[in-house]
Image (cartoon, rainbow, N blue to C red):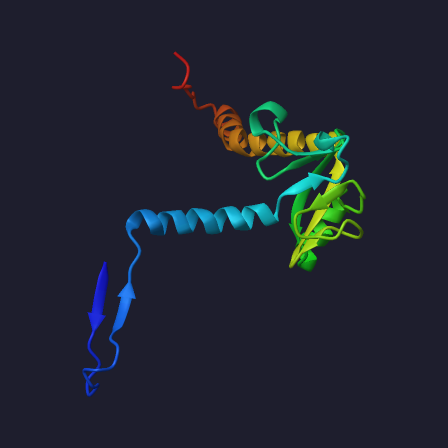
Length: 169
């Protein structure tokens, strides 16, 4: 679709300005292309051609790991971490280390040195530590969810007031 714009005071022999607007389909495709380019930058691959599965993106269902997580060498979990001091130090305290593995390669980095893109750095930790933290986080969340109900029932029992659980039939 083309739209002509008339410029006041312009001579008629000068070329006219035209504005090309993309169709809806073209605009949606541009958004998808831009998003995939940004995701490709964060892709992590194995630098070893003999072992292409040394680094792979975790499958949330099969591996029981969050999306955006990578499995490195089978026994380590890798994530992109923002290098702001509070984020970086918190991950280090949780056991993450900056990945300097020569077999891990990002799409925009040289093969040596830490894998870093702008404010993001690729960090890894042991998989069993990651899963233990995840299990503990789930236990704490469950306790926070069930704790108020237990406390209420305990207080009512102490006061001698009967309570009824309407969720059970």
